[in-house]
Image (cartoon, rainbow, N blue to C red):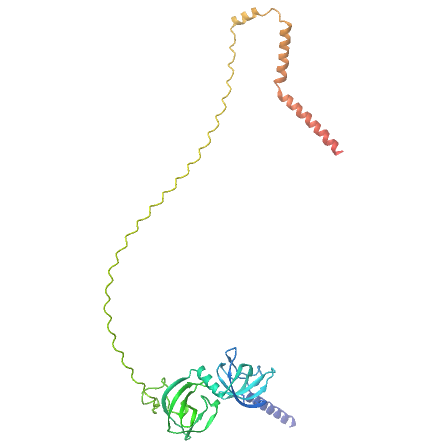
Length: 344
Protein backbone atom coordinates (compact mmCIF):
# COMPACT_ATOMS: atom_id res chain seq x y z
CA UNK A 1 0.00 0.00 0.00
CA UNK A 2 2.80 2.39 0.94
CA UNK A 3 4.55 1.60 -2.32
CA UNK A 4 1.45 2.54 -4.34
CA UNK A 5 1.05 5.80 -2.42
CA UNK A 6 4.71 6.67 -3.09
CA UNK A 7 4.26 6.03 -6.80
CA UNK A 8 1.13 8.20 -6.95
CA UNK A 9 2.89 11.01 -5.05
CA UNK A 10 5.87 10.88 -7.42
CA UNK A 11 3.59 11.09 -10.46
CA UNK A 12 1.71 14.07 -9.00
CA UNK A 13 4.99 15.84 -8.18
CA UNK A 14 6.26 15.38 -11.75
CA UNK A 15 2.96 16.71 -13.14
CA UNK A 16 3.12 19.79 -10.88
CA UNK A 17 6.74 20.52 -11.85
CA UNK A 18 5.93 20.19 -15.56
CA UNK A 19 2.94 22.53 -15.21
CA UNK A 20 5.03 25.11 -13.36
CA UNK A 21 7.73 24.90 -16.03
CA UNK A 22 5.24 25.52 -18.85
CA UNK A 23 3.64 28.35 -16.91
CA UNK A 24 7.04 29.99 -16.40
CA UNK A 25 7.85 29.70 -20.13
CA UNK A 26 4.74 31.75 -20.85
CA UNK A 27 6.33 34.64 -18.95
CA UNK A 28 3.94 34.69 -15.99
CA UNK A 29 6.23 33.75 -13.13
CA UNK A 30 9.36 35.82 -13.78
CA UNK A 31 10.33 38.07 -10.91
CA UNK A 32 12.69 40.97 -11.79
CA UNK A 33 15.37 42.05 -9.34
CA UNK A 34 14.12 45.66 -9.43
CA UNK A 35 10.67 47.10 -10.18
CA UNK A 36 10.84 50.09 -12.56
CA UNK A 37 8.55 52.30 -14.65
CA UNK A 38 10.18 53.94 -17.65
CA UNK A 39 10.42 53.64 -21.44
CA UNK A 40 13.05 52.56 -23.94
CA UNK A 41 12.99 51.99 -27.69
CA UNK A 42 14.44 49.06 -29.62
CA UNK A 43 17.74 49.96 -31.23
CA UNK A 44 19.55 46.83 -32.39
CA UNK A 45 22.23 46.22 -35.00
CA UNK A 46 20.15 43.21 -36.10
CA UNK A 47 17.12 45.39 -36.90
CA UNK A 48 15.09 44.04 -33.99
CA UNK A 49 15.08 41.97 -30.79
CA UNK A 50 13.35 38.97 -29.20
CA UNK A 51 11.61 38.76 -25.86
CA UNK A 52 12.63 35.73 -23.78
CA UNK A 53 10.83 33.81 -21.04
CA UNK A 54 13.79 34.37 -18.71
CA UNK A 55 16.81 36.65 -18.53
CA UNK A 56 18.73 33.98 -20.39
CA UNK A 57 19.57 33.94 -24.12
CA UNK A 58 19.04 30.16 -24.08
CA UNK A 59 15.47 30.38 -22.75
CA UNK A 60 12.29 30.21 -24.84
CA UNK A 61 11.57 33.03 -27.31
CA UNK A 62 8.02 34.32 -26.81
CA UNK A 63 7.55 36.37 -29.99
CA UNK A 64 7.01 35.00 -33.49
CA UNK A 65 8.66 37.90 -35.31
CA UNK A 66 11.41 40.31 -34.30
CA UNK A 67 10.35 43.39 -32.33
CA UNK A 68 11.53 45.95 -34.89
CA UNK A 69 13.73 48.97 -34.22
CA UNK A 70 11.73 52.01 -33.12
CA UNK A 71 9.22 50.02 -31.04
CA UNK A 72 8.63 51.47 -27.57
CA UNK A 73 9.22 49.14 -24.59
CA UNK A 74 7.69 49.86 -21.18
CA UNK A 75 10.38 48.65 -18.78
CA UNK A 76 8.64 47.38 -15.62
CA UNK A 77 11.71 45.79 -14.04
CA UNK A 78 15.38 44.90 -14.35
CA UNK A 79 17.28 41.68 -13.80
CA UNK A 80 20.85 40.39 -14.07
CA UNK A 81 20.91 37.71 -16.76
CA UNK A 82 22.76 34.43 -16.91
CA UNK A 83 25.14 36.13 -19.37
CA UNK A 84 26.07 38.71 -16.68
CA UNK A 85 24.22 41.46 -18.56
CA UNK A 86 21.22 43.62 -17.68
CA UNK A 87 17.80 42.55 -18.96
CA UNK A 88 14.59 44.60 -19.14
CA UNK A 89 11.35 43.06 -17.88
CA UNK A 90 8.34 44.07 -19.98
CA UNK A 91 5.00 43.01 -21.41
CA UNK A 92 4.62 42.43 -25.13
CA UNK A 93 1.30 41.47 -26.70
CA UNK A 94 0.05 40.02 -23.41
CA UNK A 95 3.26 38.07 -22.69
CA UNK A 96 5.70 39.03 -19.93
CA UNK A 97 9.36 38.45 -20.60
CA UNK A 98 12.89 39.82 -20.78
CA UNK A 99 14.71 41.83 -23.46
CA UNK A 100 18.50 42.45 -23.47
CA UNK A 101 19.27 46.02 -22.35
CA UNK A 102 22.13 46.20 -24.87
CA UNK A 103 19.54 46.40 -27.66
CA UNK A 104 17.47 49.22 -26.07
CA UNK A 105 17.90 53.01 -25.95
CA UNK A 106 16.43 55.11 -23.07
CA UNK A 107 13.75 57.72 -23.97
CA UNK A 108 10.99 59.68 -22.29
CA UNK A 109 7.39 58.60 -22.79
CA UNK A 110 6.75 61.51 -25.17
CA UNK A 111 9.84 60.58 -27.18
CA UNK A 112 8.73 56.96 -27.30
CA UNK A 113 5.31 58.00 -28.65
CA UNK A 114 6.87 60.21 -31.35
CA UNK A 115 9.34 57.47 -32.31
CA UNK A 116 6.57 54.92 -32.79
CA UNK A 117 4.45 57.47 -34.63
CA UNK A 118 7.25 57.82 -37.19
CA UNK A 119 8.20 54.14 -37.29
CA UNK A 120 4.69 52.81 -37.95
CA UNK A 121 3.50 55.48 -40.38
CA UNK A 122 1.33 57.70 -38.20
CA UNK A 123 -0.42 60.58 -39.94
CA UNK A 124 -2.33 63.77 -39.21
CA UNK A 125 -6.08 63.37 -39.90
CA UNK A 126 -9.31 65.28 -39.52
CA UNK A 127 -12.44 63.25 -38.78
CA UNK A 128 -14.92 62.53 -35.97
CA UNK A 129 -16.01 59.32 -34.25
CA UNK A 130 -18.67 58.45 -31.71
CA UNK A 131 -17.68 56.65 -28.53
CA UNK A 132 -19.34 53.25 -28.04
CA UNK A 133 -18.72 51.54 -24.72
CA UNK A 134 -20.79 48.94 -22.89
CA UNK A 135 -19.24 49.96 -19.57
CA UNK A 136 -20.40 53.60 -19.82
CA UNK A 137 -16.99 55.18 -20.29
CA UNK A 138 -14.40 54.20 -22.87
CA UNK A 139 -10.86 54.02 -21.45
CA UNK A 140 -8.26 56.43 -22.82
CA UNK A 141 -4.47 56.19 -22.77
CA UNK A 142 -1.36 58.35 -22.75
CA UNK A 143 -0.26 57.03 -26.13
CA UNK A 144 -1.23 54.70 -28.98
CA UNK A 145 -1.14 51.52 -26.89
CA UNK A 146 -2.12 50.19 -23.48
CA UNK A 147 1.59 50.03 -22.56
CA UNK A 148 1.56 53.84 -22.25
CA UNK A 149 -0.77 53.67 -19.27
CA UNK A 150 -4.49 54.34 -18.81
CA UNK A 151 -5.81 57.78 -17.87
CA UNK A 152 -8.51 57.80 -15.24
CA UNK A 153 -11.99 58.94 -16.20
CA UNK A 154 -12.33 57.97 -19.83
CA UNK A 155 -14.91 59.31 -22.31
CA UNK A 156 -18.63 58.75 -21.89
CA UNK A 157 -20.53 56.47 -24.24
CA UNK A 158 -22.17 58.33 -27.14
CA UNK A 159 -19.75 61.24 -27.07
CA UNK A 160 -18.56 62.51 -30.43
CA UNK A 161 -14.88 63.33 -30.47
CA UNK A 162 -12.53 64.79 -33.05
CA UNK A 163 -9.53 62.71 -34.11
CA UNK A 164 -6.42 64.66 -35.15
CA UNK A 165 -3.80 61.88 -35.34
CA UNK A 166 -4.07 58.29 -36.49
CA UNK A 167 -1.72 55.30 -36.33
CA UNK A 168 -1.97 51.56 -36.70
CA UNK A 169 0.25 50.56 -33.78
CA UNK A 170 2.75 47.75 -33.47
CA UNK A 171 -0.01 45.79 -31.73
CA UNK A 172 -2.07 45.87 -34.95
CA UNK A 173 -4.79 48.11 -33.44
CA UNK A 174 -6.04 51.38 -34.95
CA UNK A 175 -5.49 54.22 -32.50
CA UNK A 176 -6.67 57.82 -32.67
CA UNK A 177 -5.68 60.92 -30.72
CA UNK A 178 -8.89 62.51 -29.45
CA UNK A 179 -9.17 66.24 -28.79
CA UNK A 180 -10.96 66.62 -25.46
CA UNK A 181 -11.25 69.42 -22.98
CA UNK A 182 -8.49 69.50 -20.39
CA UNK A 183 -6.43 66.71 -21.89
CA UNK A 184 -3.43 67.34 -24.13
CA UNK A 185 -2.81 63.78 -25.31
CA UNK A 186 -5.61 61.26 -25.09
CA UNK A 187 -5.60 58.19 -27.29
CA UNK A 188 -8.55 55.86 -27.85
CA UNK A 189 -8.83 52.37 -29.26
CA UNK A 190 -10.73 53.09 -32.47
CA UNK A 191 -11.43 49.43 -33.20
CA UNK A 192 -12.89 48.57 -29.78
CA UNK A 193 -14.39 51.78 -28.33
CA UNK A 194 -15.67 53.81 -31.30
CA UNK A 195 -17.76 53.45 -34.45
CA UNK A 196 -14.69 53.96 -36.59
CA UNK A 197 -14.59 52.03 -39.85
CA UNK A 198 -11.47 52.05 -41.95
CA UNK A 199 -11.57 52.83 -45.63
CA UNK A 200 -11.04 49.17 -46.49
CA UNK A 201 -14.08 48.12 -44.40
CA UNK A 202 -16.40 50.97 -45.35
CA UNK A 203 -19.24 49.96 -47.71
CA UNK A 204 -21.20 53.19 -47.90
CA UNK A 205 -20.97 56.76 -46.59
CA UNK A 206 -23.69 56.04 -43.96
CA UNK A 207 -23.53 52.36 -42.96
CA UNK A 208 -20.90 49.77 -42.15
CA UNK A 209 -21.13 46.06 -42.90
CA UNK A 210 -22.90 45.27 -39.61
CA UNK A 211 -25.41 48.10 -40.07
CA UNK A 212 -23.88 50.43 -37.47
CA UNK A 213 -23.38 54.06 -38.23
CA UNK A 214 -20.07 54.86 -39.79
CA UNK A 215 -17.75 57.32 -38.10
CA UNK A 216 -18.76 60.80 -39.03
CA UNK A 217 -15.84 61.50 -41.24
CA UNK A 218 -15.68 65.08 -42.37
CA UNK A 219 -16.36 64.87 -46.08
CA UNK A 220 -13.52 65.97 -48.21
CA UNK A 221 -14.57 68.96 -50.33
CA UNK A 222 -15.16 68.07 -53.90
CA UNK A 223 -12.18 68.77 -55.97
CA UNK A 224 -12.58 71.68 -58.32
CA UNK A 225 -12.96 70.18 -61.76
CA UNK A 226 -9.90 70.74 -63.79
CA UNK A 227 -10.74 73.00 -66.76
CA UNK A 228 -10.60 71.25 -70.03
CA UNK A 229 -7.22 71.56 -71.51
CA UNK A 230 -7.03 73.93 -74.46
CA UNK A 231 -6.56 71.75 -77.47
CA UNK A 232 -3.04 71.98 -78.66
CA UNK A 233 -2.93 73.43 -82.19
CA UNK A 234 -2.05 70.94 -84.75
CA UNK A 235 1.61 70.79 -85.25
CA UNK A 236 2.68 72.07 -88.62
CA UNK A 237 4.00 69.08 -90.41
CA UNK A 238 7.70 69.25 -90.68
CA UNK A 239 8.72 69.54 -94.34
CA UNK A 240 10.15 66.43 -95.64
CA UNK A 241 13.83 66.36 -95.15
CA UNK A 242 15.72 66.67 -98.40
CA UNK A 243 17.31 63.34 -98.84
CA UNK A 244 20.99 63.53 -98.32
CA UNK A 245 22.74 62.83 -101.61
CA UNK A 246 24.26 59.48 -101.67
CA UNK A 247 27.84 59.55 -100.66
CA UNK A 248 30.12 59.04 -103.61
CA UNK A 249 31.69 55.72 -102.97
CA UNK A 250 35.35 56.00 -102.23
CA UNK A 251 37.28 54.57 -105.18
CA UNK A 252 38.78 51.31 -104.34
CA UNK A 253 42.40 51.58 -103.44
CA UNK A 254 44.68 50.69 -106.30
CA UNK A 255 46.09 47.34 -105.41
CA UNK A 256 49.76 47.47 -104.66
CA UNK A 257 51.59 45.87 -107.57
CA UNK A 258 53.01 42.59 -106.71
CA UNK A 259 56.70 42.68 -106.06
CA UNK A 260 58.69 41.75 -109.13
CA UNK A 261 60.15 38.39 -108.37
CA UNK A 262 63.92 38.41 -108.14
CA UNK A 263 65.40 37.05 -111.28
CA UNK A 264 66.90 33.67 -110.86
CA UNK A 265 70.62 33.72 -110.91
CA UNK A 266 71.93 32.94 -114.37
CA UNK A 267 73.45 29.54 -114.06
CA UNK A 268 77.19 29.55 -114.58
CA UNK A 269 77.80 28.14 -118.03
CA UNK A 270 79.28 24.75 -117.89
CA UNK A 271 82.95 24.63 -118.58
CA UNK A 272 83.60 23.92 -122.22
CA UNK A 273 84.95 20.43 -122.37
CA UNK A 274 88.52 20.23 -123.54
CA UNK A 275 88.58 19.19 -127.11
CA UNK A 276 89.61 15.68 -127.52
CA UNK A 277 92.98 15.30 -129.16
CA UNK A 278 92.47 14.38 -132.72
CA UNK A 279 93.98 10.95 -133.05
CA UNK A 280 97.02 10.85 -135.26
CA UNK A 281 96.29 9.31 -138.61
CA UNK A 282 98.08 6.08 -138.99
CA UNK A 283 100.74 6.30 -141.78
CA UNK A 284 100.25 4.34 -144.93
CA UNK A 285 102.55 1.38 -145.64
CA UNK A 286 104.44 3.44 -148.16
CA UNK A 287 105.05 6.25 -145.60
CA UNK A 288 106.20 3.69 -143.02
CA UNK A 289 108.65 2.37 -145.55
CA UNK A 290 110.03 5.80 -146.28
CA UNK A 291 110.44 6.50 -142.53
CA UNK A 292 112.22 3.25 -142.07
CA UNK A 293 114.59 4.13 -144.84
CA UNK A 294 115.36 7.45 -143.10
CA UNK A 295 116.10 5.85 -139.67
CA UNK A 296 119.63 4.71 -139.03
CA UNK A 297 120.17 1.07 -139.40
CA UNK A 298 120.89 0.47 -135.82
CA UNK A 299 119.51 2.63 -133.01
CA UNK A 300 122.01 4.90 -131.32
CA UNK A 301 122.77 4.77 -127.59
CA UNK A 302 120.90 8.06 -127.04
CA UNK A 303 117.75 6.69 -128.58
CA UNK A 304 117.98 3.57 -126.43
CA UNK A 305 118.44 5.63 -123.27
CA UNK A 306 115.53 7.87 -124.18
CA UNK A 307 113.29 4.94 -124.86
CA UNK A 308 114.31 3.35 -121.54
CA UNK A 309 113.46 6.54 -119.59
CA UNK A 310 110.13 6.69 -121.30
CA UNK A 311 109.39 3.11 -120.33
CA UNK A 312 110.26 3.79 -116.68
CA UNK A 313 108.23 6.96 -116.46
CA UNK A 314 105.31 5.42 -118.17
CA UNK A 315 105.30 2.39 -115.86
CA UNK A 316 105.48 4.53 -112.66
CA UNK A 317 103.00 7.26 -113.55
CA UNK A 318 100.44 5.04 -115.11
CA UNK A 319 99.50 3.47 -111.68
CA UNK A 320 98.99 6.27 -109.05
CA UNK A 321 96.70 3.98 -107.08
CA UNK A 322 99.61 1.81 -106.19
CA UNK A 323 101.40 4.87 -104.70
CA UNK A 324 98.36 5.96 -102.69
CA UNK A 325 97.75 2.43 -101.40
CA UNK A 326 101.33 2.12 -100.35
CA UNK A 327 101.30 5.41 -98.47
CA UNK A 328 98.03 4.42 -96.72
CA UNK A 329 99.49 1.09 -95.61
CA UNK A 330 102.54 2.85 -94.19
CA UNK A 331 100.35 5.33 -92.24
CA UNK A 332 98.24 2.48 -90.82
CA UNK A 333 101.36 0.60 -89.70
CA UNK A 334 102.71 3.76 -88.01
CA UNK A 335 99.38 4.31 -86.19
CA UNK A 336 99.21 0.69 -85.00
CA UNK A 337 102.73 0.91 -83.61
CA UNK A 338 101.87 4.21 -81.86
CA UNK A 339 98.72 2.87 -80.18
CA UNK A 340 100.39 -0.41 -79.14
CA UNK A 341 103.13 1.54 -77.39
CA UNK A 342 100.66 3.87 -75.76
CA UNK A 343 98.73 0.92 -74.24
CA UNK A 344 101.90 -0.44 -72.72
